[in-house]
Length: 191
Image (tube, rainbow, N blue to C red; front, side, top):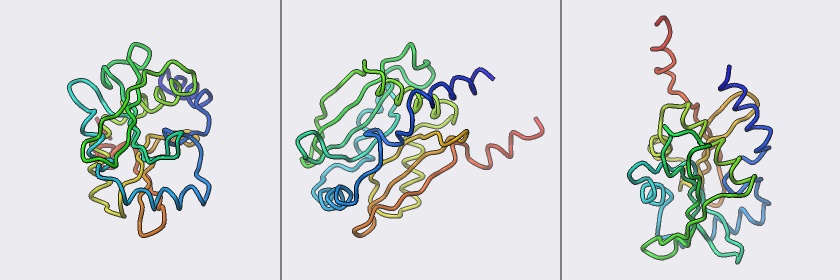
């Protein structure tokens, strides 16, 4: 019951933002992003792995354009991991150009309400899933619908899922995964 209430409050605060950068892309922005992604030397998976060290856990990741219009890789994290609640955690974003062989992102610790709310919601959904973002990244790579563009825990209505975007040819294709593996749910029945 407490979890349901907390998720409902987070959904109200975070609103409809599904991706770390929030909102949906305009068609011209999507086309430009597809074109720019070809210049990336660092995969989204590499970025997630790079920041998922020690207790720090990645919460979401995406390619996007920075304020200067350059390609950027952005990864949200929880410094103290998923076992520590969001209120007593340090929610951050690593962002930087993936166009060089080494990704050297800048770090921002979130203090503004929209970023804190969005990352806290992602934290709660991943914590409830019992899986890490890296687990979902591996699942997305196994699906192989194209180049991984973004991966984000989202709350749609009362259902949590992992939203995944791929670049396939010159299009962005979206899919999603349930938060819990079906066999995990089945094995929990009757216990």
